Amino acid sequence: MMKNFLFYKGFLLLCFSFLFIACEDEENPSGESSAVDTTRVSIGVPLHWKLASTPNTENFNNSDAINNWAYNYDRAKSALYYIDVPNLSSPTLSMASHYNRVIHKTEVYPDYAGFPTTIRTLDFAFFPSERGPYNFNIEALDFNGHLTNPTTRWGGFQKNTFIPDVILDKIEFFEFWLMDPFLENPSNEGYLYINLGTVSEDILKDGRISSETGLPVGTEPENTDTTKWARVANSTTSSDSFISDAARDEQDLGLDGLDNAGERIVFSEYLQELQLNRPDLVTAGIYDQIEQDPSNDDFRSYLNGDWPNDTNIPRRYSQFNNPEGNSISIENNTSFTLIRDPDPDNEDLNNDHILEETEAFVQYGIALHSEMDTDDEFITEVLIDEENVVNGVPARWLKFKIPIDEYHETFGNVGDFNSMQSFRFYLTGFAEPVVLRFVDFNLVAVL
Image (tube, rainbow, N blue to C red; front, side, top):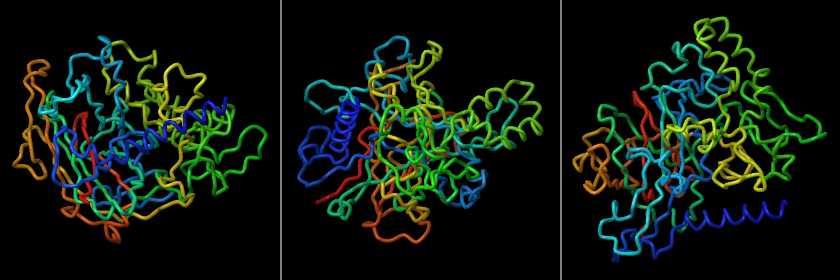
């Protein structure tokens, strides 16, 4: 049983390692040749992205709060995912929307003359009025349990770059294609921020590494501490895989190290404050919903039978990045896509078993609005595809090219670009939900 799992895990790592460092033969996705010798490093693979730590910028004045729930008060719900392509052909799931449908390669690369194929987009869905994981903000909830002042909320993800120094030293720009996020809601607008450098791994800011495999299994002693945020192991090391299916069942609890019953105990202060200070939420039944999963970190597959048939794809993926219960054994999984990640969750981006708490990065800010064009910063090309029209609106794609040295702000003590070990991106400023569909999101090195 474990041999099958380890083989599957190794196969995944091999596949995604290949996807991460793109070979030079694919230096031009359109299929055209280029006189410039380039290597593209893909950051558009959702496996191993983690929830972002709160960016330590002027936008979020609670980012320094340690062992204080205020650190996550502005975190809204977000999801980062590949759409499972077979389900795009299902009439139930592929309802009329640019944000549900298949993307053909010729839509983004009209000169492509190879074998007809589709492109798997990296989709980033953001729900600014909905409480994100580990957000225990009581005062910001309206009578429906939604976050007030959605434009002040944020949601994002981060990962280690794992880029070899020989390539990192040569990176000159980011590039990606983005489907216009406002084809169905032109009044919405907001910002995409990209951080490159060193970002804090302390997603639950308590100065401790949260790691599922550090938690005790079976009759092992309860060698853990309970912080303001989580039940954390006293051991500083942990495994990068579950040792057995039995261990997985006991350890796949999310970053707080607690199942829902444990959350109701450890976060009883939060629940008591809700009952005492927000009787409107109790009367409306919102309290009962929150009590089911106080940390709001339960994983739910997009194929879960509890989703109503008319649920759109971004909503079906809205809990896909939640860490509690996101890994089940291969033998019990009818489809690999039912799981988020076969590996245990932790806060350690680079697997060095040391908690990085430093925030030192450069930041690129991109204003997103319905009238974006080549006059806007970083946009080099716009494509309108009249062959893909949904509800009378043709597809519209924008090509972004962001020179690595044209950042807008610096936070912390940033070194040279050789020390850029982490990547974080987040959305904020939106009044309503939005979906960003990226194609070929790459760091480009000129060799």
